[in-house]
Length: 208
View 1: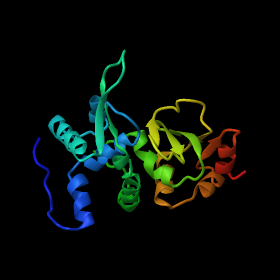
View 2: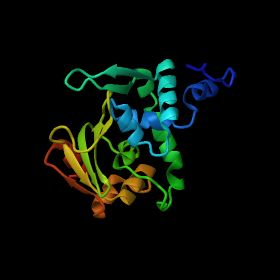
View 3: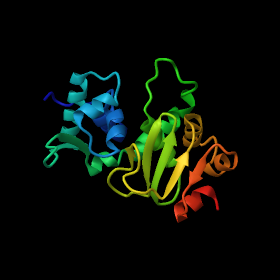
């Protein structure tokens, strides 16, 4: 394993960039905030990264205490990568970067890859309450764990159990919510978001 490169500056920002400043590292963190992921799944959801670079970044993250690698129990026995508590502390960093980068999104370019769950973290920052929310976009489904203090904060696909609320909306509205251009209450009243469910969280998100 190659030695870690350093800016050699006695500055907390420089120290942080020593660990996460390399290309792809923070996007790997974004994926692992969904919970343990196999190498092949990470590679599939990081279009454009080479296998060598992905393997190198994961090793660097293990060395720096941001991620660990473990074997799943039988019958799977596959290896997965997951964030350490130190790695999970990067959630607000990812969300802040997403908020800062939101205005640069503009129209989707023909060359832009997209995954439904890439909308999860910006949307998570715009919602309040606690519970499991399933989100339906034209691009696919993902689920959010509002108020989660540890473990995965979102996941790909349908919720693993009956969610406390379901949101149906388009990607443009999801982006607008994440950027703060519109509140959920405004989007619901404008018919841009459909909230279904009879529980406390669903009623709160609807503003009942």
